[in-house]
Length: 243
Image (cartoon, rainbow, N blue to C red; front, top):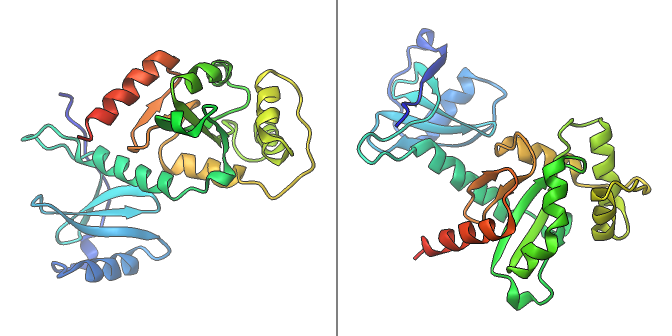
């Protein structure tokens, strides 16, 4: 097992804080120390002597006197579990469950009862492996895999990649527009209020660094293209672990 490194990113000794008594007190003190941050959650991390907080989408840890903040993965030597990665997966699952499917472009099996698995895929219009995945869409669907597309223009906001995604999401027939765009056909549509920017920002928040990025319903991320039959095997194995 590769040991994870802990990186102290700043020092808070000058505040001389005592041990916090509860989560609300921790939150109040952190907001005072670091004004302008968004604390999404904070609490005691089991019996580690650390507090775990999600701040601006990032998981960080504080010593129990709030003098030090630590950024990195916490790994249990007893169980060999990556506690931080488990937390990331949980946060991803919550984020994906809160999404509005109407903002996605969804490719499903012909009959709803044939859907066995749902995969959320952050995609870029031009990336080669994204196109390869899309060319095999019928194979994924035939295996009972529903694909829900989210936009992730790799070049970022205010780029040609972003404009291409916006045109697809603004098209009257999004699925046809996606088919055309993945085939290299220029798609043009009137500008509209589209979710591309928010989807891109969400992708960055939950750890997308490249495309395609495949997210299972469990919150686990598969970074990169996976062939249809192999993906079906992975999804079936994931489903079995639930029982």
